[in-house]
Image (cartoon, rainbow, N blue to C red; front, side, top):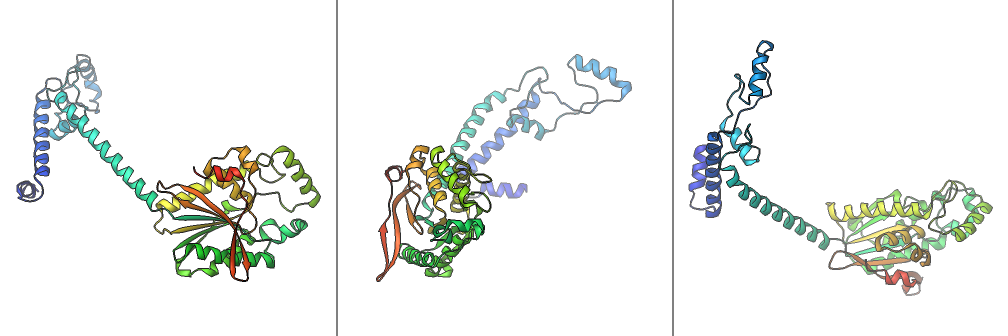
Length: 364
């Protein structure tokens, strides 16, 4: 080991600065070891206790601030470690002559180390921001049987409601529109576990190549819970009461309030950013397929809307698409909202209705 060290220090190539720094640190360590070892204040310490018959002598020696007779001297590397860590203190409160000399050097090295760590962290953050998806598309599911006939919720569970034929057509139109906007880039899809959302995604992904797709189901994207099997008359009374009480605050019996869904949206944003910044499988675009109220509350959370602004924003219609594009600083702004419709010429995306708070608060 000593031969390899001498060879590395005497090598003609490898950087004169590294060689000089290594030799300097070794010299300072040896000098510090010698200086502290010669200091009258450095005393050996041990946690071992002497036999009971010698305890009175040990106590007397301790009170007289003298090392006990069984103490052993510190080794050179132990003294050097205490100097470097700043813990070489004398039993009488005095330190070696080189400890004070090395303290400014230690502070300087600590400062340089912190600056280096901050620069690395900043570079990693900038890299993550620049490699986030180019666009994020928020899509509501297509028309469901519950959108046509609300009484169906009393006999079929909310999560099991299926799309209508028109809902399937809307989903296919949305898929063609998204393919036109995204092109051949890769896509990562998050979707609600509700059946109507899964069916909508099934129609959308038909427009994309399977090799460019990644799909993930997330229960955080589910619809607001209105209870279990819903009595039609009771739900209508509850919705009328909600309009008077406030959509954000009102809680349904055995269900959720808008504030509860807002908390779920915050949890999903954390999941989304972990996927964007830390995952090994990154995509150029993200598609988030969820429900009307959840999309509004997700935008409220991300863009910092107040409760009053949230109350003024309309739910997206079935298969409506809200597009967010990445800015140079890694944040996203709402570019536009589209309502794709199937026409004779394929897909005709019409700008959807967006209230002023949605547009003005688009930039975070």
